[in-house]
Image (cartoon, rainbow, N blue to C red; front, side):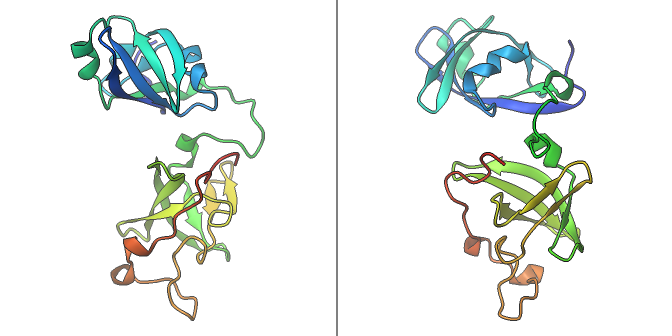
Length: 199
């Protein structure tokens, strides 16, 4: 298979592990060792990576890729994001299960059904999943991907519904959404450590 046409990120390569070319890899699969089940993984530039060995190590997996035989080669790969084509992923999940890639591009609606903006990315900086949302074409805001902040996800209908108060979009007493110049990113609520899990 060539470079994915509809890429879904499965992992990101971290630091070298030891001197024989092994790497620490953070996976975005439900079961970390399942990363090896998807066949070749691809970098954004089309380079293919074949896993020849994988084992768990705390919060990551340690992986040996074909053709990466020493620490220098491993260190050169740090930060590389790894993808597969969407067609390689199973579609037999529950109706309310989805991949992060499915959320990108969805319309963001408030509790009245009014359109607020669009999801442009999904991040996880260690404290749980966060939606990066553009509001009315303005620069993005971050919304914790929790049940309270995002009570409804409808991939089939193309939207997510947010609760403006729980999502941190309301900061005054009358409940109006803040203007862009009123937005304080330091005042954003942070989701619990299991935010976004088992959605």
